Amino acid sequence: MSNQQPRARLWGIPEVSEYLGVPEQTIYQWRTKKYGPPGRKIGKYVRFRPEDVIAWVDEQPEAA
Image (cartoon, rainbow, N blue to C red; front, side, top):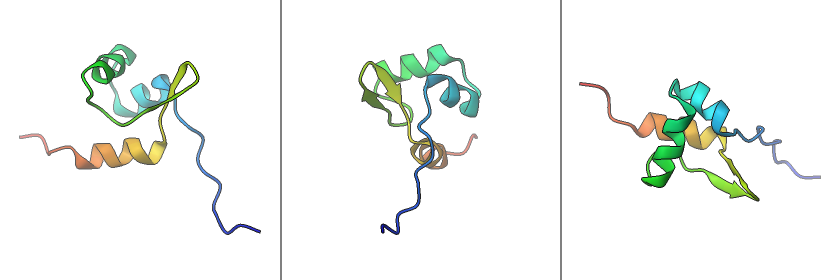
């Protein structure tokens, strides 16, 4: 048997939008500008690993 923990469910644009507190359209705009948390195309869908989104937030500079 494998010792790997089951992975968390992938997030879609709505879940990332809710977590970050920004409109869904902002996530789409960020993707066109190659900004924001890293997402992956799964078929025609964009999906995010929750740990990648959280890590991206942690990497952002503090507000002045």
